[in-house]
Image 1 (tube, rainbow, N blue to C red):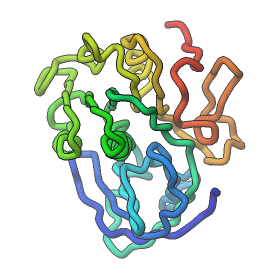
Image 2: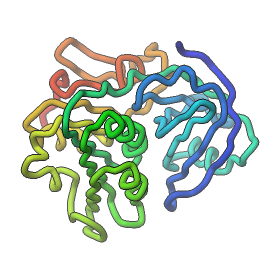
Image 3: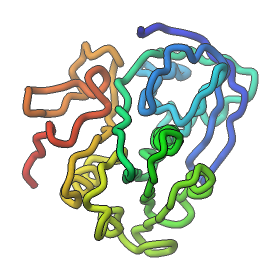
Image 4: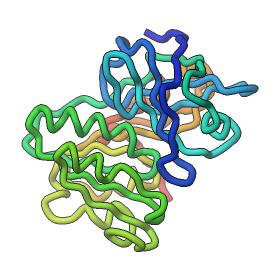
Amino acid sequence: MKSVQTYRIIQNVMLTKNVYKMILEGDTSWVEKPGQFINITVDNGYLKRPISISDWNDTTLTIIYKIVGDGTEWMSHQQPQQILEVLVGLGNGFDLVSSKKALIVGGGVGVPPLYRLCKELIKQGTQVEVILGFNTLNESFYEEEFKQLGANVTVCTVDGSYGVKGYVSNAIQGELKDYPYYSCGPLPMLKAVFDSSNTQGQLSFEERMGCGFGACMGCSCKTLTGYKRICVEGPVMKSEEILWTKD
C-alpha cells in the first residue's frame, strides 16, 4: 500500500563520479519484489525523485542513484542521520520465472534493481548470466557485487575502455538469445535487448514520474491492451505486451 514514511540515512557514498549508494533505515515490510521503487521528497522540489530499490533487509533499503539534476544533486549532499520523506509501496516488480538459466541485462542506472533480482534467482537455483552496459570504464559499477552472488558477469562499454566494446546487444550471442531475460535501462537499450532475444522476458522501464499515483498519466507506454502507467502498472512489463514505436 502506498504511504509516506520517513527514513534515516545510514550511508551515502560515491560509487563513481556521479553515482551514489544510499542506505536508508526504516520500514521495509511493504517491499515484496525486486524492481519496486520509492519516490523521495527533495529540498525545494515540487516533484519527488523516483529511485529503484537495489536491495533490502528487515530494517534497511539500499538505493543507487545518479546525479542528473538539482534533486539528485541535493541527495548526494545528504549526510548520515538526516531524515528523508519517502513515498513507498510503488511499482509491481519482477516475477521470478522458474528456469534453469536466466539472462539479466542492465544499463547504467538500470543496473541497481537487478541486483536483488539476481540474488533471488540464484537463491532458487537458477544459473544467471549478467550483462552490464556503460558508456565507459569510469562509469561502471557493481560488477564484483554480481560476481559475489555467483553470477557470470560480462561488462560492455560503448567506447571499448573495458570488457566488450559496444552495447549490451553485442554480448547477447549464441545460447543467451534463448534464455528467459530480465532487463532494466534506457528505452533504446530495452528495445535492443528485445530485438536480440528469441524468447520472452520482462522489461523494467525508466521514466520520469510526476506523481507516483498514476494521476498525471505522464509516464505511460503503449501496450497491446492500451496505455499503461509506468508508475502504477509498471515499471516492469512483459516483453510481448509492448508496442514499440517505429524508428
